[in-house]
Length: 351
Image 1 (cartoon, rainbow, N blue to C red):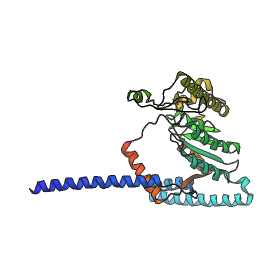
Image 2 (image 1 turned 90 degrees about the vertical axis):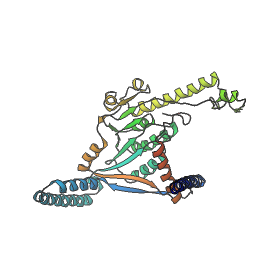
Image 3 (image 1 turned 135 degrees about the vertical axis):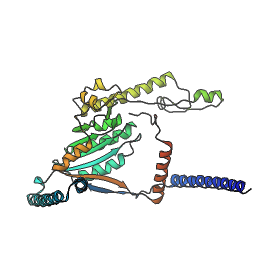
Image 4 (image 1 turned 90 degrees about the horizontal axis):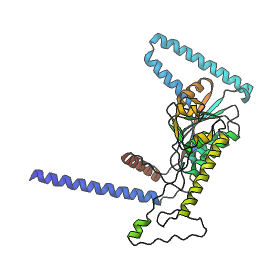
């Protein structure tokens, strides 16, 4: 009797807990959907000195592996380096900015299907261009499998602002810059990639389901009314026509032509017709096709730069309300539980 009671009580608690969690999820989603951002919402720029990060990591490792005598000698050497560095800074201040050390500004762009990081990129580029000079450099660590045309077109335009100011632009691809991601990457003055990074995929795709036959079988009519012959070429619920399909493919080909022209204009050494097949290549093969300039990871590149330049990572952080933070945590949890889904149609066209 006692065990049966405990079992029933445990089952009751489990059901109650499940109900409460479900109710909490509904409330959070409802509040998140009803919460509209205020027009006055804004963010702020954060700057991190990567030279200091490298020095701190090196110092920590030396403390672990060097004996006391060697560590003492290293401490003296480091003190001298700081003293010499301070002396150089003082001389630079007297000589003016024309003789100062180069500054390298680092931006991270993590692309998704909608290129939603473009708003962050815009703010970061604007902030850097307000202080950068032609003797400086901007490094963009770019990761993106591509996405909607208009989103990545805008992202590429943000990088074009850097080039138009005649500030050297280096783009580093450690994992993937395909389709819209490569559209951004080809703007670089110097494009580097890890040996097994994926690049290219200069092509356009569109995919749309059609439920017309299913609805017709259920005797459900869908009226698609338009003003303008090609206002709607293909639909999800109406009956598609051969004429509509032909027009849709024509538009798709036009977007592909624009994409190829963009790559040709920004990366003249590439045989666009040979690589604009929609194929993607790993780093070494991409180098053979001249899609990249060198095989090198962003870590290696930045480590070398830290020896001769002042390197700063610049990040725009959007100020968020408590509700936004709760929604972000909830979304992150759902993403981890469900995994990433491969979204094929957003649109209408995706790189």
